[in-house]
Length: 307
Image 1 (cartoon, rainbow, N blue to C red):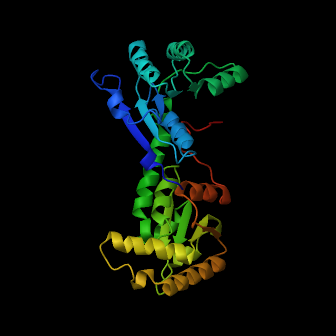
Image 2 (cartoon, rainbow, N blue to C red; image 1 turned 45 degrees about the horizontal axis):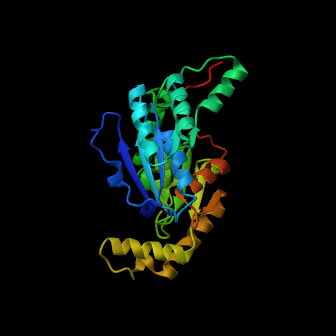
Image 3 (cartoon, helix red, strand yellow; image 1 turned 90 degrees about the vertical axis):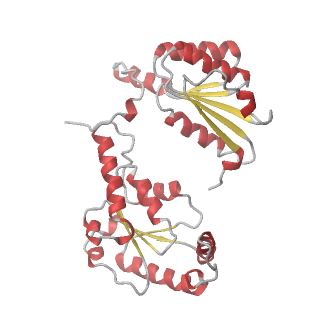
């Protein structure tokens, strides 16, 4: 996954931030594309859209400003006026009709590009169902049952990380297997954020394989693998980060090949799904796991359907 850290500057500004904040001082070049995220809540949805857009232009410099928890017309006008100064692209998830209308009118008058993330789908659901939306800011982030399930899933991932307790395999929704540096822990936490209980086990040829691994449905096991040369490079960099000699047994290419052979043989015996993570981001691998195991992402569900 290409990094955009060098091209992207993010500035967080709440409505009550001091007026003396000089945006011009923060903008280092007129060639940069400025984007404003406006929200009457945390702004996470529009921010993800902005990040996805910027990721398509790794050579372009961006300035991303986030104005969140906007609840009054005064605060909104201030944010819109700042955006106008820099001909910014505006992405917003405002849900209150008066704020949406004000934004549309202001942007049309100022000839500013603006994208309303929520209104089109919300309006279409209302049209199809005849049910009026709640128009409640931050409804996605309420401390509901779904939220607490996610917290429990995160705690589960930490408790059963790195094969600490194989008994966790029996309770897990997903069990990740892989040699060192195949992204087991990051994937466990990423999937936990989608309300899935995930355990993982590092594979070492001379280590004992827990009996619990043979007691669970192979359909919930994912074997992670990688290309030897990629692993060699990753492990060498890992050793350098610790101030150690990169040319150690840990990064030895023949040892890595032996580890991968051991892992692949185990995956074949288990009959589990195998994913090569060599050229994949955490997000891409997680998506492949969800699809392969026919699992749903529950991270955005705010309530459960009841009969």
